[in-house]
Image (cartoon, rainbow, N blue to C red; front, side, top):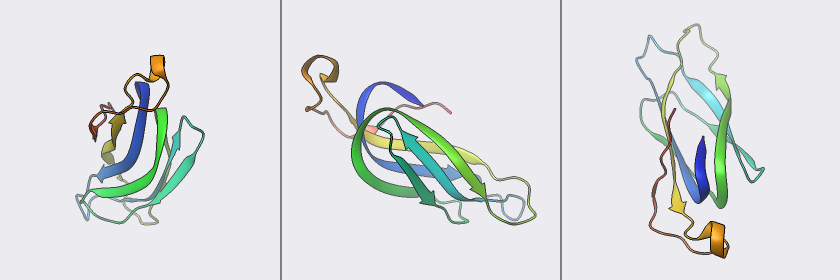
Length: 110
């Protein structure tokens, strides 16, 4: 997911389909940031939002990968939404990365 500009991110929230007992679930997901850092997040069997604070970092994109399915016989785990929370980095292209505007969910499309 590309943001199109430098942004400072500090939280990730995952939402999964949870039509139990029909659905399976993911037990882990990994995210790699354009800064080169990769983080793994443990997940639980739940339809509630699963949010994780991360060490703030300035990135231009994130890549979701490494979804590990729970070891059950149900065939349908599904990620329905991901939110990447943070701030735009004002003037990053012109003045260096040191300013920011208000914290908000950053626009993404799945």
